[in-house]
Length: 483
Image (tube, rainbow, N blue to C red):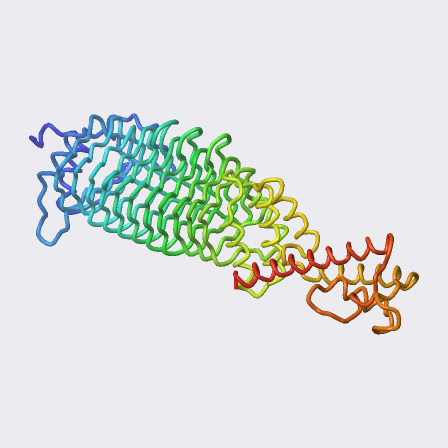
């Protein structure tokens, strides 16, 4: 390109790049780049392409393109180009898309700029990608990108609604994805990406109703996923994601009415927290997810959840079992025994045996609903007598009540002896115990033979004694088998 064909601004850029000098034509730092119309601030995309691909450094200087506040006309096509110095086009207005598919460069800074779209599939950057306060009307396509440092998307605005506003699937980032305050009209795609550092989406707004707000399936994160204060309209999908640290949805608002609002099946992380989050609007799927700690108040969870295979060590805040059991009863898969065992184990792990027994009792009652009628009857009997073995004091209560009944009845009406002049003297409480306890023999039962209604009472006490003994034995066996 002949330098004589350049405008004054283009000539300044041509001369500044080999020296790495910065050119700032903004009126002030708060200027909206979308309003730039001045011809004096206009630069042709072909000039930028030519200077990037043809510039060489001056002795003792590090070349770089550093322009702020320019209006760039035409398509800036740098596809598959190798550019060995930084590109900084900040607070600029791109009238056409920026084409960077397969481009390799040292650093790319588009902070504060306004673009129709960014096509940067398989982009390679040795440093950082900066899109701070950037406005991209279409999508930012960064699939398969390799960024050796971090990506900065703080307070950027991407998309116009529907589809993907940001695509980072299969990308590799050597540090953090820093995006607090990010606003997207469209979903964010991070599936199968590898982020060595953290992802920060604090106070971000992601709107893709009836679609995926965040698709992070099989994502790997080296430290944490911070989505505190996130507003997500559409599904948040973390299926198969692996996060070394914690996942935070503190004070988040997740909404996808009529669909899955949070899908985290097979996700692994140290901690999942929804502290102070708004109630999730939409289903939650946690099949086979694994966390050491889950922090969430019961009211956060929606009416429909899926918990099959979910594992954890602790739930916070620490609450009575009754406050946690309602969630298990809302499982869309019906009765899921593993969910009850997992909750009971979490209480036992902290020495709270009473709440653990409450959960186990609730499990048996929930299981009873699935049984045929005759098994239900046996279940009701076990529940009423000893609480399926988890309320052993009930057996003592029944025993005392029946002992009192028999003692009063037989104390007022002594049964005649089986053989006159033989056997021990009659003792109403011991006689009643002899009827109730099927194994122990006090010598009273065979020594006396009640008649009439008292004979039927003795039959009843013998039958109830066997039922109590059987249910206690079944409960003890069930309890011991879990230890």
